[in-house]
Image (cartoon, rainbow, N blue to C red; front, side, top):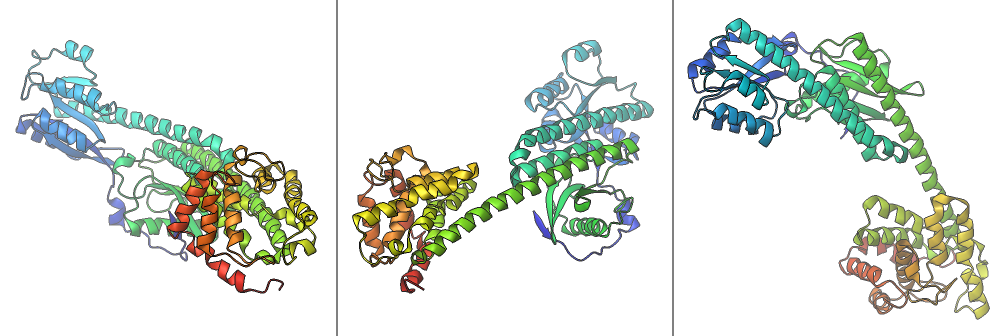
Length: 518
């Protein structure tokens, strides 16, 4: 998600807004006696734990409870009667929760008015429950103690589970940080934020309806939200938090808190702010908790620094390719925008052949250097009107080995080097420079072989007039299986006949109208 950063300024939430808790503990009460359900609500009236109130869900039977359990996967405690529609309905419900739903988090408390039907030791030994109470002993005070103890266990288990999930995200993303991409970085930040959610005891992500935490980075005047704990449907509140955090980071004056409970920690790289972590804990954090948050912020900052270095290298690679391609184009002005069209053709054909979008883009980039070796060919041969002599053609063929030599000095250009060297090889052999079958070359080389010839055919050259597109397509189709890879030809012709190259080929007309030697 990308949000354009506005000018600093925001409103302070009112006391009434701040007083409203956005988190509750869900308690499922399953009992076929309506009075028992009502009494439970009354005995727990005003109950809070960690500044969160209770939300009651009620069921008069095990069947009704199953429906609620399928709908709400964030129930903290279930108070279950045993004898309802059957003598063991409550026990079968325990098995449903633990085995069928696979829910190991909800704390299950058996309450029975007929202990003889379900003896305590038998139930504790044979069913995965957390407590067993006789209804007669469960006074208001004991119910309070039982529920509080169960909520504490639930909270601690959820914290452990969230940290486990967050750690898994971080560990899964960590290896990719060395070959970093936007997707691996997002996964890393998601893991960091998930760990922070567990640390701060934020409510479970499944029922957060507003923003309780985010990790964001700055890119000029843009704020990139890398991860959040929930949906961003409350746009006003989301925008308010974003503006307050951005303004605080930009000014360098960080308040102890943003909003009522919000905490903001800057992400720093090289002494300058590059983003922030924002969280709203549901309980006060200790100094040790804050220190741990700062350690996590340091890790986020390191990941951002790795990304910056990676992007610098990536940009340097792109700039090197563009520079070499421009040199080749400057040397042979008669080809016009041929190099740019080869880039687009190659990328689109690669995509049609199932190559992922990112890799196909790299294919297009590398294809731009297929004729870089022409900078070593004399102008009188490159610009000669009419057919080359046999001796001149031998010199022209040297552009493939010259290009390969130019690109041999950097391993990152190895794909482009093979394209430069082998794009004139033929499918069944007999091309140049080695005469080997092009089936032994890379897919990109075989793609460039097709699109280079096609674009040359429909373009004006010093030695020929442009061919009609239909004639050029017929030539390519006729050479499938002899000069060209049949699979590449099929993909190319499909795109051509569907009109998907029309925009790419639009520059051919202007090239053909331009003077040959400007």
